[in-house]
Image 1 (tube, rainbow, N blue to C red):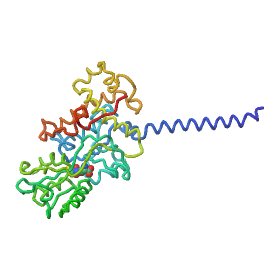
Image 2: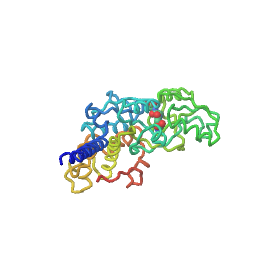
Image 3: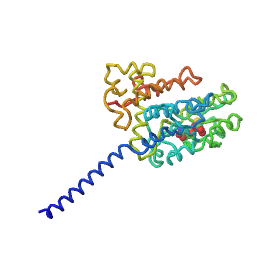
Image 4: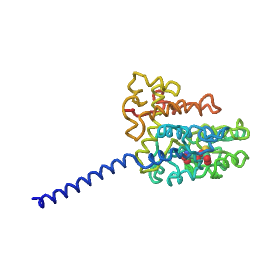
Length: 347
Ligand SMILES: N[C@@H](CCC(=O)N[C@@H](CS)C(=O)NCC(=O)O)C(=O)O
């Protein structure tokens, strides 16, 4: 009798082992390595530009400041409960992708355009767009240049390894404009060359032109042409292969947008914990376990808003009316105000 039962018992044992290992695999897949690595390290390694005013630059106190830097801080607040637990890594346009691919950084938040090839063949996942931009062209006011066609036979300063460089070639080819690109790896060199008069024009994302043109010797002597050469949806990105980490970065961005829509700010967030609006309670983690499903505390969004602020606060801090840039929200307004900023439900 016992002999007969043995093979059955062995079979059951094999099933049990396979089942347990499947469970373990599902669990591992739910929480990829990046979250654990960041938590063990106690600091988020975040790639930025470091050379772009308003987005990521070293301020007078020696701190990394700007809109993109604040999205690094938002993720650190969500994951570590501490918005200051960020190690910033400055990157130029060409090195930003290798440092993310190699694992040197956990995420990149560096005025980077979401394109199909970056999303697929380069092996990245893009979190929601934080700034919808487009490519512009800056010229000297006294140059007489009013349109792109006026640049025929001219020189254009541009940053290597960017969508900017490729769009410039495409747009000028389609318009039949002959030009000479003057290409540099570092944006500071682009700026310097244009400032010294080595190019008739300087092209990059309009946000970059607005911000970094403040560094020209006489910013008021220049103007941005009234043309948008491309779509440049800018936002944070992570490596392929860690869905949970992608979710964390994605929902950290959505948290800032959702909070603005719900009227939750860094100032009133504590008061909002006692709100009678279920949407507010879910978003802030007073009710439900939305954070836990990503391996985070349920108050991850509360931490982001308390420590960094909602989308509108982040925007205004770096680009709003009280800054030298005063960039109107435009398409970056909330969807409820006719813009493109829209968070899926927190439920
Ligand atoms: N959004 C474009 C352009 C990004 C870009 O690198 N722009 C330059 C000019 S504003 C820049 O950020 N340079 C800063 C640097 O080199 O650190 C892209 O993703 O390729």
